[in-house]
Length: 485
Image (cartoon, rainbow, N blue to C red; front, side):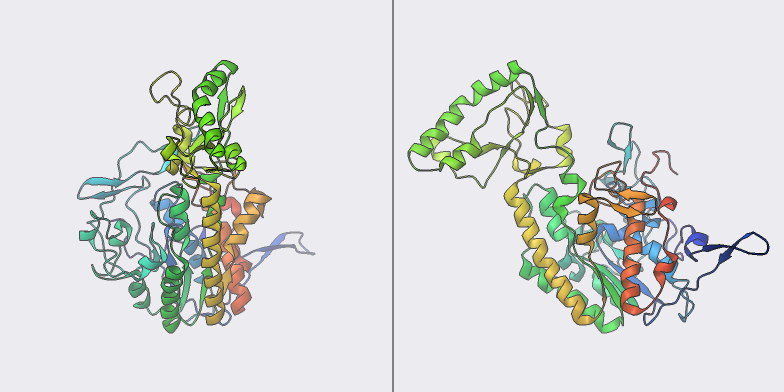
C-alpha cells in the first residue's frame, strides 16, 4: 500500500497557507503581498478526524484513487487548519492512500471494483487498466480520514465492518478493511481512539442515495433507524471531541446521475411510431376494459396509455405503483413523464435491440424498475431525506457544533448555478464542474467548493478565520487525464 501513515500531503501549500492581499506601495509602485495569519478561534485543530462515506474519502469518477484522495475536502481543509498559529501542534492528517491512480480494488488478486472513469471525448468510459491496490496488503489505522465508500449511517457503528473475512459475503466493507485498526473495530471506535480535538461528520447520504440510484429497488432507510444510528454516532463523538462540523444530506434526486438522460430520450420516425402503436393497441384497449369494470379511474387510464409519434418520445417503463391488473393479463406499464428520473447508465441501454425488429429496449420493451426512479420514488426519497436532515440539524444544534447545509448548496448549483471564483458550477454532467464523471460524487473543484463552504461554517461557529485562506477554484481540476500517473 502506497504512502501509508505518511503526514498529509497538502496540495498547493503555498497557495492555501495564506490568503494574499495585493496592495501597491505608494513609493515604489511594486505589488506587496500582505500575509494573513490563520487562527482557530475557540476550536482546536490539533487532531482532526473526518467521518463519512465516499465523498469524505475522496471517491470521484466512480472510484477511489490517489489523486482523488489528495483532493478530498478533508485533505483540503486540513491543509488550512494546520496553519493555525494558536494550535499546540501541527495537524497530522493521515489517509489510507490507494496504490495508484487507476482506482479499483483487488482481493487476493481478483478484481472486485472497477477502475475510474475518464472522458473519452464523447462521454464517461472505464479506464482500460488493471487495479493494483490489494486490500489484503494494508497497514491498520486508525487514520484521520475515516471516509468509507458505501457506508450508511449505521455502518459507522458496526464492529467488524472492516473484517477481511466478511468482504466476500458483503458483511464487511473492502475500503474499511484496508484501514481498520483491527478486524473487529468499528469506524466510530477508530475515530474515538484518536481522542480527536475536532471532528467533521458527513454521514447518512447513502441511506437515501442507494435507494435513488437503484431506481428504488434497494431499501430506503427508515427514519427511526437513521435517528438511532446518527444520534449514537454524534453523541459518542461529542463525548471526546470538544468541537466539530456536521453536514446534512443533499437532495440526491437532483444529482447528475438522475438528471442527465431525458425522460423523452427516444427519437422515432412516423413508420416506426405507427408500428409501435399497433403493438400496444391491445394493452391500451385492456385499460379501457379495466375502467369499465371500475378497476381503475379515467385518470389512471390516461397515465397508462402508451402512444408514440414522430419525433422525441417518452420511454416506456414498469411502475409498481400502478394498480395491479395482472388478473386481466395487463402489466404495469406507462410512459415516463418529466417527474421521473432515468438513471445515467440507462443511456447505454435505451434504444438497443431486444431481439425482433420492433423489440426495442425502453420503447416496445419497457424499462425495468431499476432503470427509472419513478415520481413516487422521488417523493419517497425526498421525504426520507427531509426526515434525516431534521434529525441532523437538531442534534448538531444540541451539541453546539458547526453546521453546513449541503442540501441548499446543491440546490443552488442545480437550479441557478453557484459561483466559485471565476467559474459557475452547475449540476450538468461533464461540463458543469461540480459532478465528476459518475454523476454522483464531486470533482476536485467541487471538493474545493465544499471545503470553502465548510470552513465558512466553522468560522461562523468558532470564531476562526479559516476562510481567509479559501482555496482557489482554478487550482483544482474538473477532469483527470487517462494517462495520469
